[in-house]
Length: 143
Image (cartoon, one colour):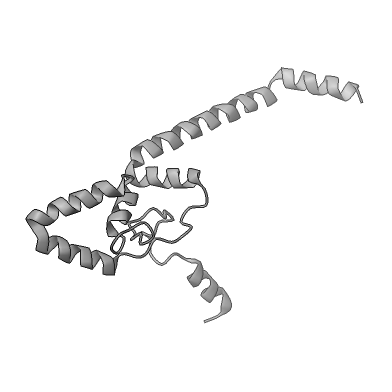
């Protein structure tokens, strides 16, 4: 295998379904009590950890064996939350929006691109106008 084949094979993503979205379900042992599963679930859904812990404790009264088994599996299966998952709060808000409300995020991006397209259109109209040519001719006279 030559260098170019090796380079192109390593630069491709491992799966077509891989996403750059860092907002995933993690365990959060720094903010957790036992293993950080409830804190991770709360962080993922953007709610207070105490609410998830209360729901879990209430569920223990009715479904103790499955919940305990599920909690142990979650502790073993979920990765630990990286310390610096997002570079800034705006990035965190964007990726949370993509995960929780993708239709709103898409609508917001669509609106921003429409606004940008309008601005570029007005700029193109000005550059193609007689006014632009007249302003350029006047500016060239000043030199």
